[in-house]
Image (cartoon, rainbow, N blue to C red):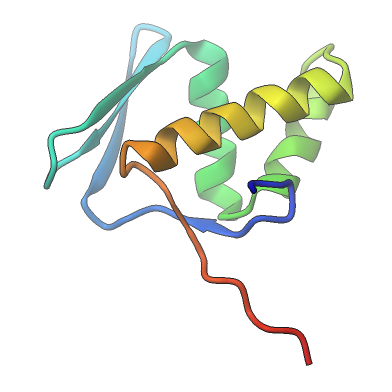
Length: 97
């Protein structure tokens, strides 16, 4: 289950390009794509800058007038969608101890 504490990374064959307020994410190996609106593109930028979900979440809370629960759901949905299309991956969990 994806949470704000999930660690993520972007595969080396994934590229991001913005054009006219929208963006496209492309996996050069598989050909999978995802189109993002302006807010989705900002989410991507913050996720790729931090390689973690929680810092992106906190930055978005500061930037947008949105309820925490709504932002959490939207951000997790985007992350899960990107992961399902091979455009983002999860870092393996490290065992405690």
